[in-house]
Image 1 (cartoon, helix red, strand yellow):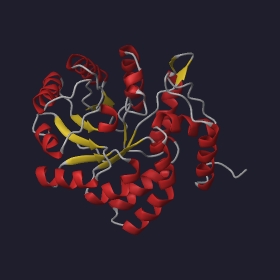
Image 2 (cartoon, one colour):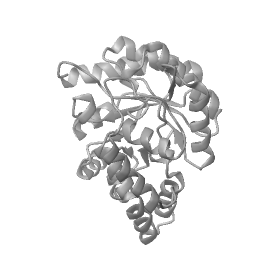
Image 3 (cartoon, helix red, strand yellow):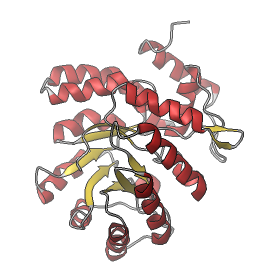
Image 4 (cartoon, rainbow, N blue to C red):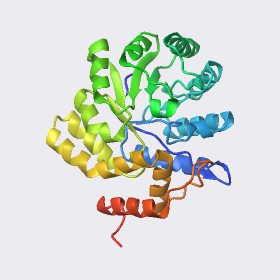
Length: 294
């Protein structure tokens, strides 16, 4: 399986301290209805590290069932230990996920042999594809293009999500693995450059707010209309820069609240955006014609 297009990451909403299954389903439905090409629960926006094992399984099942095969589902299964990662990968496969995504998480820095062994163990435990997620800012490990190319030799490991914000890494990966390598941009402000570099897709939480602009950018790239792609990208760039600068769960929850959807309090120690940042975000949404001018 090779995902293409806009891969949307839903936030995990809460009500009364529990996962709000109804609202989660509605958010997913809105994204699918807006034309995104895949849904990826349990990413950074979905506050994966702040959920219990049971909540993670709950979110995976709710999302996969709600999508109902209309688009692929890419479920985050990362855990500190290989044993727990295998557990969540097997559960994702059981409930019908199209693929899983793994960022190697570690208190101690892992060596290449440990990283390769981690992914190999998961690959042997499931039959669906695996995406490697490289995001040293959150996972604490930086996977070089060389180690990524070695991971892609493991059966089932077929995709790479690169979130360092360095497009040269994507070029290097293509050099090592060939033009058919499936790599995905995870750095929102790099979306246009990544597509031009040959990215198969863009993994983003932005479709909570601007799904049509996100899809418009991808479709312009697919048609080879770079000028149209540039116009679409630069229109949405202030929003993309904002959500990265202030943390995806904080920024997306604030944007949804401004639009009239309460996704519940963030899990402590995460806190909501302050009033000045909310005012800044409101103006960005006004400029995008998402909200009316005051």
